[in-house]
Amino acid sequence: MPLNDERPTSTSSGEDQGSDVESSSERCDSMTSTGYPDCSRESFTIDGSSKHSTPSSSPPKTLTMDEVMDSASDLFKLSLAHEITVNRNFHLEPVSLPQDSLWKMVSDNVHKAFWDILEAELNDDPPEYGHAIKLLEEIREILLSFLNPGANRMRTQILEVLDIDLIRKQADNNAVDIQGLASYIMTTMGKMCAPVRDEEIKNLRESSDNVVTLFRQIFRVLDLMKADMVNFRIDNLRPVLQRQSVEYERATFQSILEKTPNALDHTTSWIKSVLEELQSATEQSRGKERAVPGPFQILNAALLHILMWDYSKSPLPETWITDEVRLQEIQWKLQQCQAVNEVLLIVHSTIGGPIQSLPSLSDRLKRMTSVLLEGMHRPGFNLKEALESVSAQICCELNKSLTERNYPALTPALQATLAGQICSITQKDNPIRTLVEDRVQQYFMMLICNPKPQAKLEQVPAGLTSIKPELALMGAKFITLINYNKSVYGPFYADIIRKVMFSGSPPAANSPQSTAQDAVASD
Image (cartoon, rainbow, N blue to C red; front, side, top):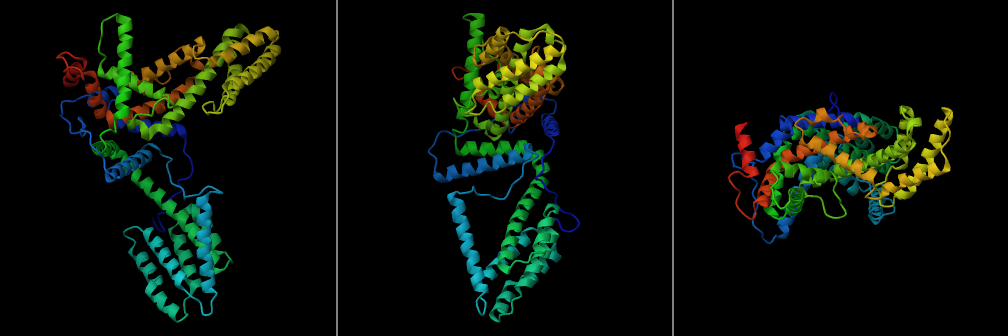
């Protein structure tokens, strides 16, 4: 914790989301050098030339409790390091127990008992200082933990003023200056705290409460300062982690895999199901000929499946667990945008000419529909009722706009038709819904396959112009996630794809994978 001339700033305020995506993309680009193909080629170089290119796994064995706990610890470290690396806004808050919970009631009662005992001891005649000395000793250790390694003068001063042995001797002679020690503690806290805590320190100094209440408030502020300290160190650690994150996360996951050999079961099932799906589609298009997809084609299709993942049917692959929240947020926003786009397509195809070339009307309809469909991913959300409300609002807005431009209002029959078509997008086989979903998948597959996806973010397929800004933002976020994920787990994917492609027989000399390796060698 810096002292007077260098104080940590608050990390609680949010940052611009767009700049976060851009900077994350730049960081991922720097890790993958020239983009997706190079990253993929490196991942699928399985000749053992790189120490990270062929992850090893142990044969099945019975796990001990210690091994399970070690793996859980490694997973926690991996998740924490990943979150610090990819989330610029990541910070820790002091623990706050839920109101009316059993834990909070127990905690409140225990703390109340401690402070009541302290107050009773200090009010004795002569006063008892047993609990007070324990408090001072704990405060001393907290203050020392805030110091930088080179702050020797401040360390010496704290040890001299809060000399526990001396305070015990003073207590034996009833000569402890509790108010003086509290004043010194508050002054020292003021030198160490982040600027955001200056007001808290000021309130402490101006407090007229008794000693027990004052110390209670000191501990409350110290808890806030401890969180500030952790966040300050996280900010300092982030650049180091960003430089070494790929190697660290890969090595940590390899350690987990060695301790728990089934740590890639869901990932293997994911890639295997994609391979079977591609083979089935190839057989349908080519008759009985069974063509084996290439490794890049398998991985690209698998990454698209991640975007459309159905969490109710199967758990996310282990290699994506650290990004589960971010993936779900993208998926939820994408579902909402697709529904909005479907509604707008239906409106324009049904009404036609009178509302063409009216961007302001389209923007109003888009905003209104987006608001009414907010939270459509939640389990209790009734999509049909929401679409009925959307239909009613759209008809009202259309009638108002048509009347202003001297067009006849919508007839009841046309309004009923429009409402029926809008509500029909709840059906999975609805042609408008199918069209939009297919084109959204085309857009994301184009980004996944393109060597420079950032240059293609604005190139949305026909029919998706209404949600172009949202698609570009989600595309940038998703590409950042998959580029980083491939950088870390590419060797594991290569090993799994090799096994599922050639599990029945050894690879042929001109197999897709051999061809891919030849391409890498030729580059």
